[in-house]
Amino acid sequence: ASYSSRIGREWRARNTGSVGAINLQFSGYDDNYILLQDADGDFSTGATNAGYLSATGAINTTLADGQYITLAETATPSSLSFSISDDAIGFGNLSSSLTKYATGDGFGSTTSAIAHAISASTNAVNGYVIELEGTEFICQSCSNSYTISSVGATPAPPSIGSEQFGINIVPTGTGSVLSPYDTANYAYNTAAMPSIVMSGVGDDTVTNFAIEYMANMNTLTPAGTYQAVLTYTMHGLF
Image (cartoon, rainbow, N blue to C red; front, side, top):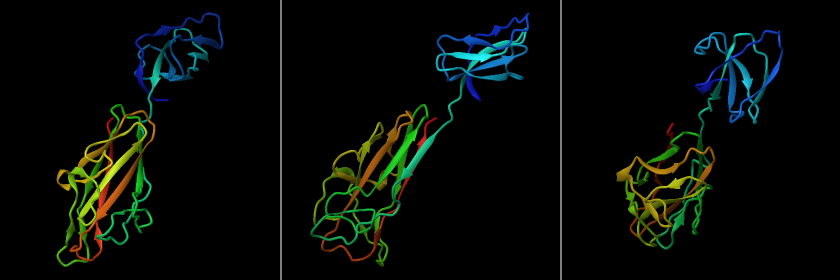
């Protein structure tokens, strides 16, 4: 096993009677530590891993006469986990007389709905952040690439009959959502992107971030196929 650090103390064994396996007990240490054996006490090269201690700091091993031993804390493998429940969502047909919310089936809903969720965790010492980079909500079939107005940096509630495109995010777990996406209202501010919208601590437990997408149009909004592309990128702060 690899190890991240070695304790400062060393012991030297005396075995003058061909003693075989013995039980050693190290008070204050547990199964996150291994016993290292070395012939010259240097431990930088030639050290042998004699195995893990038990949860109570015990180990059964054999020591040669003159052999040095010490303890080392095992290195915890770095972990970073990220998943998104759906990468293609939609509103269906928008209307100037009601608010639409994106859904995973692409048909949308007239009541607030979670479109998809991001699950994230890490054991990084300083946790993680999730960055959002996104485009405006642009008509793909209009000759002038018409854009439905984004809500912007100030969260706002749905306003039927007004052009709007925005999101909000709700965490379940130890992670957090950053302003302006952390309220029951909606925001979407491409001027500040890429921007950090979610973060979490390095406790290696999963936080689920539920994301809602809201859209409204007015009577003058051109008919067409509208699309926004949002990219979420997770960074571990090791």
